[in-house]
Length: 187
Length: 84
Ligand SMILES: [Zn+2]
Image 1 (cartoon, rainbow over the protein chains, first blue to last red):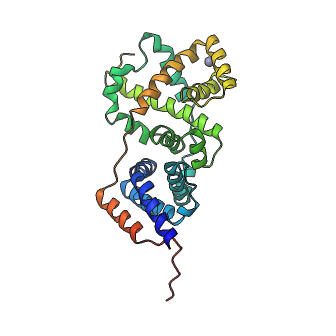
Image 2 (image 1 turned 135 degrees about the horizontal axis):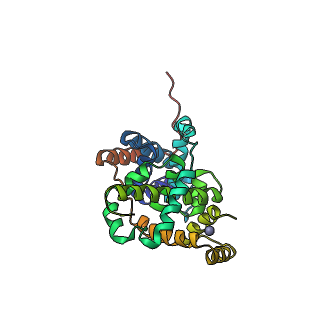
């Protein structure tokens, strides 16, 4: 009982403050507030139940996000499978055009990006296909290492690398399109 | 390796996760490939922006409170099955 009370105190001190991370990931992954609330709840209850399996000294955030992703995968297996097919070739071409135009001012630069940052990057992230969104969330938003992200998603580190490379290109192409449509870039 | 594969290594390099051997391979490719040199600049800028990018979304206060209460009253052992 004393041990259990101690575990509860440790859980409350280390895991509860990370609620916003878990909720953010849940929200971006489901694109739906009530589903995100539900996932948050289930993730934390499960995490609490299995907290004795957590290795002290390792990354609690990564551990919680791993549980979140397992819960998500169990619930939405079918929905996730539908989103797997995705043709990257047009994105790669659009990105190459941006890279090629860089010398004539095709990059974002700080000023343009500051204009974009309010909401637009969030929208671009929400619109990414699921697998790419998941990797950007874990690595760029929640700052997991590639190895931690791979463990959370149950895939090899090489998959994290390739998805991240594509996801960052997808985001830049989307932001570039947006910036051009709104006259922030004249390329 | 083609430029598509090098893009993965360029991104991983910016994120500081490459082995010394991979870094050397990227450096040699960049010396020879102007397209990837441009991509490297774009990715370095973008990675810096991303770090300041998407903000965390706060769970509604009521949801946080409910969760705290649930944890507070939860037992860690699996609950005994109820019989009807
Ligand atoms: Zn190249």
